Image (cartoon, rainbow, N blue to C red):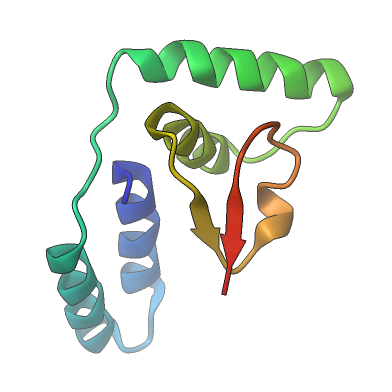
Length: 97
């Protein structure tokens, strides 16, 4: 799981009406999955993808772009319930559930 995904999960915790229960669920998940920290290689992938999307006039949210770029750097599929946020990113393997 990328650090950026972890950030998004924590936002969900903070926005939840049941924050304590949600925090436990997220903490349990995080304890079972390694967290990927961004490295220097992320910047060039992020820039390439963003520039390509800008040329097409097809932007996505910054956090989604960071999550997608991290998956590309790691050569990992991106697992999401909302594939529409990520379908515009070239070469990104998307898995839904």
